[in-house]
Length: 348
Image (cartoon, rainbow, N blue to C red; front, side, top):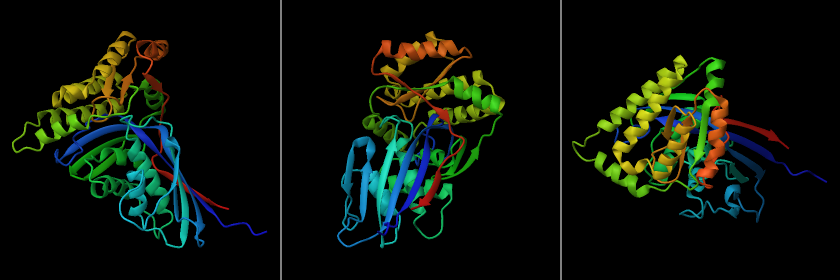
């Protein structure tokens, strides 16, 4: 009996935390500077590719986190269930003779404010790119992922998440004219890398990030003529300070950059630092933490990056105390990513 031909395409891309300078990577900021740290858990994509046969659906989407597997019709307008995934599939010109099933998974909670949707998009586009003529660079994949959100879905979207997922590691991003930017990966000794990884805690606030109304208010104010954008300059300075701190292995300086960034976020709008975030920050201080950053744009839900002191037992006591403070708070295990987008295939 003949074995049916099948290719399996695999791709992974990290999420990001501690995004110093976020908000300055946007169209209304015009220029920006962002330091962020790519971490695992990563987004995973696996594509099963076969030759099309009559009567078989051309594209199957399996969004594992949602328990949702369905036939996506690429031959009609609009989106069915997961616009980001479907728009990314439409963006790529996959040969018509190929049928495929796309499986997507991430162990990071949805709406965690860690760029998970960008990581999924980068991993998916990177995997699909292996089915097209030629091959795009990581930077080109990041640009495509950004276009999916802004051009195809009409969303407000900075550029840092896609670049962090594509490059991985510790990235310093300088946006010289939206959406164009240079990316410098920060390479440090193993001692600094390991110590940074050991001290960081990612805390999920227990609910998906949902602050579009607050974000709309901030954007509306910043896009006005002669708007006061001084808080954006504070955010840019925090990114530069954080970059210098990591390169020097100066964790106290990094902690100050994180706190200054969070204060600048609150200057943009007080609601960007939520009451949940303030409670967790206070608890972290009690357990010896030296720095904290509200991940992403800020607001209700989402997550925090906590930078702990040198004593491992105090970090562990903080993690244990989280659930006592509120059962919905959750520390998500993380590892610093030495790689960004990874993609490979096997043939059966």
